[in-house]
Figure 1 (tube, one colour):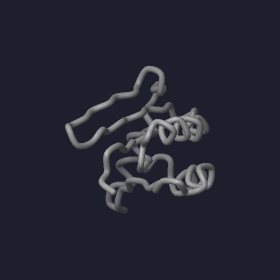
Figure 2 (cartoon, rainbow, N blue to C red):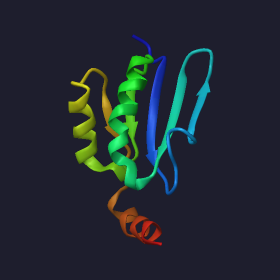
Figure 3 (tube, rainbow, N blue to C red):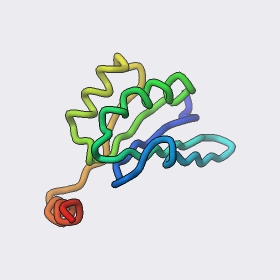
Length: 102
């Protein structure tokens, strides 16, 4: 099966799925990016369920969700599609924490 539709869910201050969803596509694949505020992580499960109902085959969470949320999302959807995450290496963690602390 070819990848035809996938989504990336990310965290950014003041973002919401209602205002910060972007869709980009080619004649082969559709990509959906959905933004969430840090305080609204719990909303990701409902949005993921909607995305899957709409044909999304793969979910990727930004590293800010952390491994706990990868597990929560995967469990909430009974592993029906792969759920993964981006990650920063050890050399980037301190600068990332500095940025997020501001």
